[in-house]
Image 1: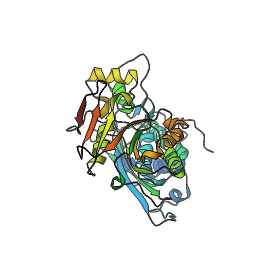
Image 2: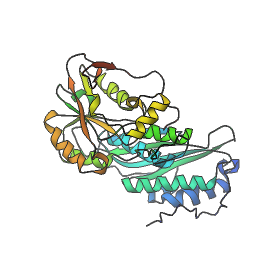
Image 3: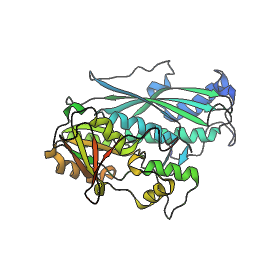
Image 4: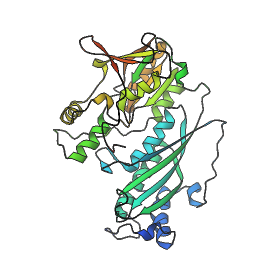
Length: 348
């Protein structure tokens, strides 16, 4: 088993930086890839160094997703761009009902970037992938001139395997379905913004960056009739629900007093003039399930770290089709819509 020590064991000086030669296809590039990336991820598929990896897939259907990560700062309380890249990809697969199997990782690195920071990111990706049970099996490295990037960008592609036949789909949503979220919202976006802007609170806001595949597999294995799921990243809770409900002839009504926002997160939102309902998360998902499975699903969630604060926040209705409504503490109901543009820059 590999050491968790983040001290770079690779043959580079502590303050050595990325140069254009590291992207030139020669010895410098090969040394960087071999000693920093392949040495860390270390699996039979990657070690063959082929142009593509040959992977065993046993079922007929796979889930396939891709994403790019351009977060700033690249290291933040509760995570970094490396763990975020793996978790973001794994969660996209998990909410489709698939079990994540393989990930690719492509790095676009700016000239002058610290090699030690690159290793720290790669190590974080390895540790996160190992925890989730996926393998990073192929990838790419490119170097751009100083001033033509922003440190480092990561692109990932994920492949997942379906071990269920009844796949979640918005087409299965029906009147009376319950809407459950697995915990508090807006923590990731506010953790990144607080770190970026130097905001200080009584307690540090940490990102909720966490994989969801384990708890989702448990719910599916226990027979919870999940009609649809969404990973609540950019655009937050509202965007996730609107995206789903607009694919139906139904509506959903959520209760504001059931949605949990931590005090320090709420304070940060108020300072920056942001609505937590629209702020990004990286370890939260919403699921729309058969109403008869509500109590069983909550019991399963409450027994896990990633779902111990899970709560039912609303239900599906027939009135006002295609709309998401929220009822506030006074019983007043209003419509929720996706925002134009983004509230927060560079949070994933």
